Image (cartoon, rainbow, N blue to C red):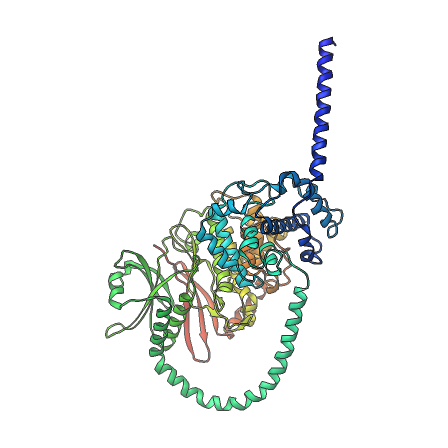
Length: 636
């Protein structure tokens, strides 16, 4: 080695030593910088509440949600989303010291793959409250405050708040995130808990709704309340039984007279009831002549659907807007009641994923007789059934299928938790999910929907619906709950993912349910085999498997295993981990004969299909009347 080479090598080693010394000194200095985040706010929220036997993915998700809550507390105190970058090391140490009390020997960064700087970096270079509020329109921020500035302990206000936040993310926080801690999807929840909600992020309801964290004991408290309710109900039932027995005889003598009076007065009651609804909701009462003109005198060429209650026509109003007219046939006392019920249900709800009611028509003419017509927005892309099993040849792309799944879930979550009183749809199926020109899904056909009296968690009612979509506990025992709709949604989601019908006959002419088929594939570890071949713009395997698992979980035969619709929305919108799917102790197909017998004895009949639509026949033994409910396809 020459002298010049030796001198150059000497200076290189000296420079490298100085560089390492400087890096070590900087790391030491950063470690000595105090962390402005207060991790102690997590301690009362997670004490005893960490679920046992979590896998690594669930543990990291739990850690991440806790950090987001701490960021929200920091924003509430300082107006900053993130701490200074030079405090990253000390903040991780503070978080690690808290975590070791609950997850011993769990190194956050190495186990979860989190980098040190991520704790101080976030979404679209937004670091302060003012930067966030400058990006979001003031009207949208006002909507967040009006939706989230309340106690979020219950499902209804929580669902309202999270639905508003999800739309904010999709519309305005579309940029890139650094890492996956305080990402763009978390910023609305962090902001809402810190500034929009008066109780703050550490409140039990706020932390549980927006971050999935909360103290233990709520389940035990809920169980105790149920025991008290059951005991009180039994005692009251015994006392009331004696009273009811005495008055039953008097009521029985008058029931026939009341029926006659009700049938005689039903027409006037219908009109009076709908006039009241019209005044409160600003519905338009169309004249029969206006509708005849809009449909070209109910031309056959304008028919876009056929159902048990009549036909559906497309038509054009004088202002040029295209609408759909659902015309009830054979109007009678019973038909008027069904018509009034459907108008009342649709008029009481307003949501982007529910079909919108324009108005109605009540008329009596010498030639046509009694006329009952519902006027709704026209869905140009028909129904989900049309695209999966009908005449539409091109397959729906994966982004559109995701949009349909999420929109349908949001619509059902609103019916269960946003509407007052809550509404159970009872007939969720592919042909009742309509699609507008942007393929935004709209839940339709509320002819079987039930209002839920306040305080009740379930109803006992005559079975109605469509075979293959009806939940087992409802088909067998007539027990209707919000999770009966969850089961039907799971079946529709499986149809959407697989392109297979809910119920088909196999080569041996035996019934085959898509729920049993999908479960068998998931159980063998072949969840991706559920996805239909040839779907355009297919998503990542992780997302596809997630949707399959959600569908199988929703369509589980046991009621307790299914999530609620607001939980389904959260799983579809966020990275919330999916609970493990319990074993299926019974075979739905094995019980099919019993289900059919039960439905027949409860006043329901058999499945039939013809001309692209499915029908479900209901028979009321007490009155001897036969009612046929058929879902209609709305096609352009």
